[in-house]
Image (cartoon, rainbow, N blue to C red; front, top):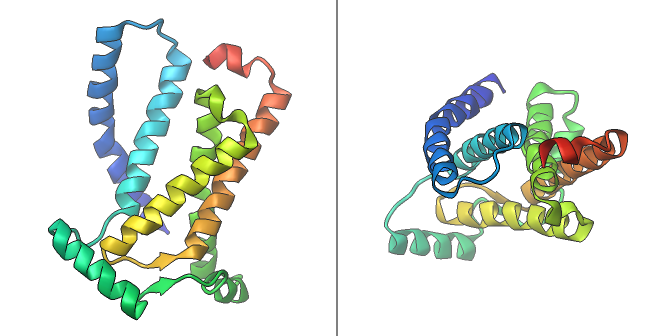
Length: 188
């Protein structure tokens, strides 16, 4: 767990200057009304998600044709592809309170809480449950689909856990929104 957190922190720190240059340039060119709190939340969100995506998409990258051939072979042999729900979650739940199982389960859930929290916070169009659920599924399914091509495990359980985390983040946003009604005016 500590190793994964260190990797995520390192990736986030590497993404920070890129975000600062891109977002700073956009702000200078377009000069929108600056909202410091919103910009700070957006910067944290963008840097965190860049780190998460770099971690999730770390694999064997090759020429597109080679990656496609590898994906086809993997689909034919079902090598490291688990499409049956709870195929990995079940054994991990039985292994609780083991540290490795807890890290795997909670890590996959908690990693996507910021996605579910920040989307409705920063962009009001994602405040509808169906739209938020669609974005959560789109992101997690896209990651798993890409992992097919880069020789990583492809598991429907990861989609379930990531989706649960994203929807938990959206639920957390909804709860805070209900308790602090002025949050939108402050950030947006």
